[in-house]
Image (cartoon, rainbow, N blue to C red; front, side):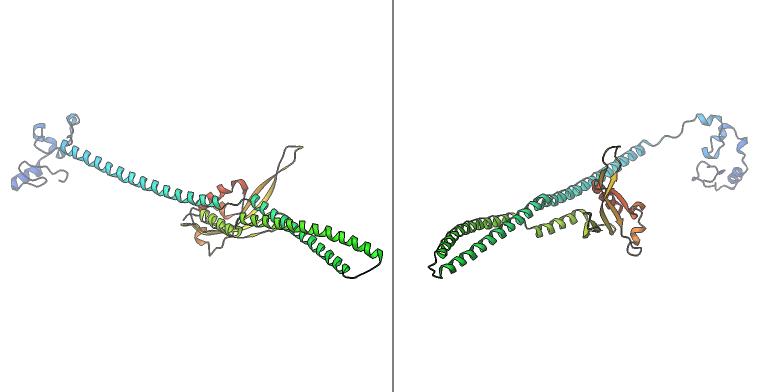
Length: 324
């Protein structure tokens, strides 16, 4: 009902009376001249407020409507809580499955692991064995040559006493060399047996290295394309790497081993710190989406030097920045 239009008893809300006299009376009535008893005949919104209106209580909410509203709110809260708990449960199950998968891959990697010291020991034993085999083979060939010389000398008859003494000397030498040859062959057989045992115990380094490399790539998403040695006089390598993680931007970069001489107290030797130098290989066309990504910080688009011990933290930060 519009402001200034009063409700007359017996009529619908907001409708003017049908009687023309009543309508004229309604238009001519001045609410300022009406008394309190006359104003009570008109709706509250059609009257001007007086000082007593402030003390009048406001209309209370229907109790039945209030109960229904509370029940609906509680039902809505229960439904929201149920959906939230289901979502949390699904996320926990997903995280558990991912953790179990990574743990299984890690256990497999531990089984295939071959440490540098173990590989060095196997290579040293193999080199030592080959050197020993070569030495004993040379001795055996020398003994066989001497034996042939003695046999040829025995085939020529001679009555000269000097020749006879020389022949006896050669015979003793032949016997001594024959004994040494027998001992050398025995030692050679033993060395061959030990070599076979070592070869059986030594892991298949070619297949294992490939399996370990594949495992590292699956766990981290970092693929080492090749390794360079920029300075042959220094054992510092440069690794050309590509990151191809799921739901992430691809990135080509290099990690170069480096050493940094740190300051030391006066009179003490300077410490050498092992570092990595990160250099991104960016292309404006190929890496256009990466360069405009909001999750990629600017400092990862520039070369960075960091301690080798912090490589895991660096890889995790780079991985988060490459997420789409």
